[in-house]
Image (cartoon, rainbow, N blue to C red; front, side, top):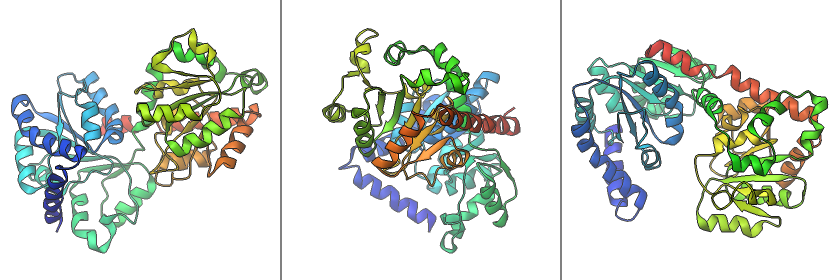
Amino acid sequence: MYTFAIYLYAICAKIFALFNTKARTLVRGQKNTWKILEEKIGQDSYVWFHAASLGEFEQGRPLMERLKREHPEKKILLTFFSPSGYEVRKDYPYADVVCYLPFDTPLNARRFIRAARPEKAFFIKYEFWRNYIEVLVHHHIPVYSVSSIFRPNQVFFRWYGRGYGHCLRRISHFFVQNRDSEILLNKFGINKVTVAGDTRFARVRDIKEGAKPLPIVEAFVGRTKAEINETKRLEESQLPDVLNNPVLIAGSSWEPDEALLIKYFNEHPNLKLVLAPHVVSEEHIQDIISKLKRPYARYTQTDTERVKDADCLIIDCYRLLASIYRYATVAYVGGGFGVGIHNVPEAAVYGVPVIIGPNNKKFKEAQDLLKSGGCIEIHNQEGLDEALDVYLSSPVLLKKAGDAAHDYIKENAQAADIIYQATLK
């Protein structure tokens, strides 16, 4: 049934590609995989990392980059299933070969493994392609599951999914995010499990340590990177001065998030807002601008002098958000009023309180941060107003929440080290 479903999926994707750009990109990209492998794979063996998309890529990234730092002679093969992952990271410098992973048919699996000749394979989070795993095991190639997380309602553990779930028994070792996942796998008869945590924590830690100053953002918030770092070390009695010029940084925001944020911003003249929307299209940027009642600047259209006249800074480009969060008094991570929140650790690593929307139940790091006190969940405008009013009026609560967020990330940043020592050293 599994293989039949994959064939059906592949046929549907090819039909859909006639009308849909993303599907067309996927089908063409998979077809091009064979040419890439033929041209780029030499006689060397490769360590293979497979990520569905960008989120999973970020979880595998700390392992790939450490492997290249400590063993530059090792070759890395990186595959994606989603165009949103491949198209953004096809030129990733730490991978020697980057390509799409063809649909998981028996023929594709055999052909791919024969062409790539991996020495080890790392499947990240939810990636469990049965035919690829079977071929890897047949060739005695270790297969590791990284940053995976399991719940009882997943197909592997339901009566109708037991056939597919058999592929879990073929994994050489699981490095799961939590104890619940370990217990569930143990009940299923799988004991080669280590609770390592989420490798994304190592990634956000690395980003924090390597973050460079952003002069435009510093001019906007009125504080340099060094001054921000000093603020984190202030005693509670010294924080009221900081709260005279608070900065709310909202990352990966969607329209429902922005409606709440902009309303609060318009009504609080002492607050500065840095808004980094998830969708950076001209149409969406203009929609944001139409709702603002206070002066704004666009990151790509301003400089360190003109931005001082703005109260809202719109980040109308990509790849800055992870570094921008360090300038926050309070951070808001978007997506919680839609399909799900975005990267909460990316903000929490800087030791700032985080606010999120209600759709966060499937995100372990968000649940843990909520329990630790480093994060607040809101459900509506009233909830956002109350959360911000509390943080921006109480230095004691602001510092307590920020410290909780920082400590949580620090305690969980060892996952990549654990996996690397066990599999790649």
